[in-house]
Length: 164
Image (cartoon, rainbow, N blue to C red; front, side, top):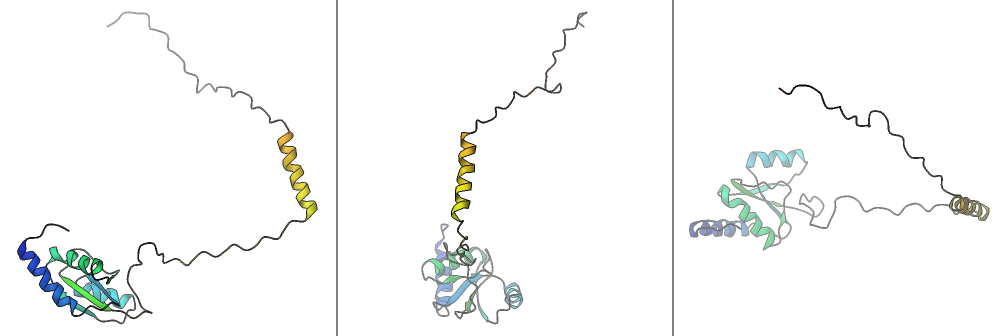
């Protein structure tokens, strides 16, 4: 956090005390202006109502960070930096909009690959013979590459004549 003046500290403490009354462990917190958040909630199909608290732009990020770190409240995915309002959304378990905690992923867990059918004994012998034959056969040596005329550097002969 940045260094704050005593006036800013009192403002933050007043807003924190007000927000603390509305926050529960299942709540989400963030900073966003009212029209934008209401549009985001409706477009994502979330029927929850947000409670807004007015604060200064410079202090909104510090207030949200306090609740996320100290109180353990989930940070909403609609959170933005430097906003004039802090919002709190009460969430149920089935309709969460919070960002996943570090280490978690939103992708489903990978499933185990399907088992491959086992090769028969004669097929295994043939495969091992092919591998052994490749190892025993001498490797062909590549012939040295010839330089193409484009890659040869041609030195220009020194000009005989008068220097200007």
